[in-house]
Amino acid sequence: MYRLWLRAELVLDEDATDRYHLVGSGQIDFYRSHLFRQGYANARTFARALLRYQYPKADPSAPHLKVNQIRELVKRLRRLRANLFLEILGESECLSVIETEAESVISL
Image 1: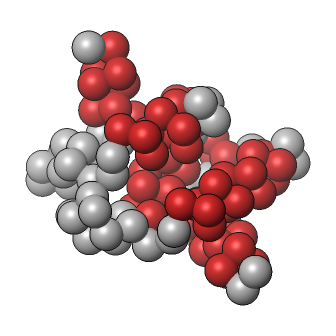
Image 2: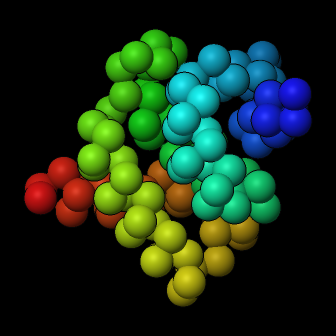
């Protein structure tokens, strides 16, 4: 129950008409491994940007990156977080950081 609440709280989009529209995106493994365990509860704009990047469509079975690619991206983002204060970035800035790091992952 706690993870369901955390999932809804983490992707709450207060600017949207349906504030919980992102809850249907992604699978529980994505949330557990790439959002919860990475500690993005304090960087919710970053969590939303990562979710929107990985699942640009509402279909959770159609992720943008393959499993190995998203794992590598998350590793790179975790290292980057040591020098970048994600909590103060806007969602568009977060998305820009994610896209920049994803380019190098995709080219591998």
